[in-house]
Image 1: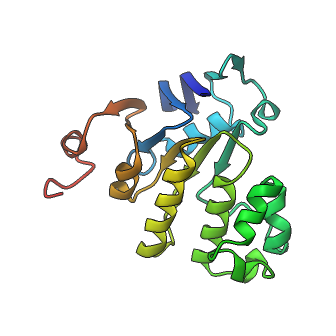
Image 2: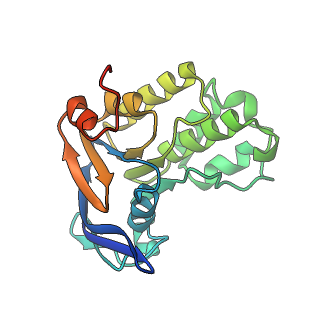
Length: 220
């Protein structure tokens, strides 16, 4: 079992504090939900964990190794941004091997979802098809920890259900931190729930506690 430990994360932009002394952890075999309103700092936190944004203070450790540079994260942490991040002019069959080992590349090539898209480029896919390729590729990448930002946006309800099942299956060997406004689907597959608001991160026990934070309607 591997562990990703994130502690003492603080980040400000000018006079505005986004994150203050944030702590969160994840282990392989677990799915962690990261919830919060728009602009609460979820994207910033994931980018700090991945290493593309530097916190004012931060302590990030993979097992016994403190991660200080983005190169330290290689094959340890993979990140799917809410914005399209893959090259647009490369065929899908040439794109997937950039992220996945031979076995997982072949697994995706044989997937009913990916097989029809292999000879197309990202720029020629619909928004939902692009999202599906990105999510499945990152999930099957070599990293032990997967950070997913809005993985379900643009997916039909049927595809969302199938992707959540794949995430659940892959979580037997990997750890996931998932941020998505499809709150109920995210919570459904998560082992732990965290709520980020007003610069602070709080662990949540159940849906009722989210309703008390006015994040969910009381009739759910």
